[in-house]
Length: 255
Ligand SMILES: Nc1ncnc2c1ncn2[C@@H]1O[C@H](COP(=O)(O)OP(=O)(O)OP(=O)(O)O)[C@@H](O)[C@H]1O
Image 1: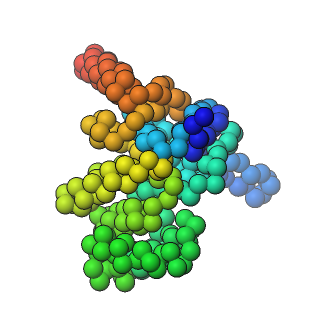
Image 2: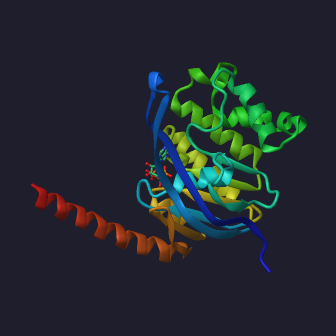
């Protein structure tokens, strides 16, 4: 029987933001209104160990929320997620660094949080620094980095430290062209290791088709389809064409 690396069972995630808040001291009244948005509405699937899964879906469908929930950035409001003790890293813009610390210090912090020993981190440190191409900037606070430098550091840590599960959110499309090509090649090398389980969110269907075995299509917070990459991408492209046509027609009618 195939070994499961990730199990997601009936996961719901609700974003809550405070809409308005007023206190009438004289009346002793507190009024508050919360805005709730259910970004995931009961998502279930399993990922076998060693599989490369693409996640697709139109803007706002819940892809990033799903990755962040699997990574433990959010806890589900309902349902459960099991990663069976596998070490997991999330590669996403804006997640994971202490901005007042240097890149060098953040490598240690990230490594320890990912479950690596200090000795293991020290052993791979030179390779991480070299891959990041940050030079002396590695000793400067991350708050002074450009977004490209930030993602170079994030990618290098994830790629070289190499956890059993890797979650990638669109980051293959940032950074300068040379780094993008280098990181794409590195990612292909990592996922050719059949023990690694990888989930990739991308709007590039070409990358998804090249890299992934299976694809999970998320639509309005639910799984629309989960199956072989070519089949799901074809159905998704057909759906998006119809969606764009409908929107163009609606826009014409509104003119
Ligand atoms: N912090 C937040 N507070 C409130 N709503 C949020 C928050 N983050 C995301 N959402 C909403 O949740 C829904 C899902 O967002 P999410 O970022 O997961 O979608 P996505 O599929 O990754 O989108 P994209 O392809 O545009 O990156 C969207 O409607 C979004 O507006």
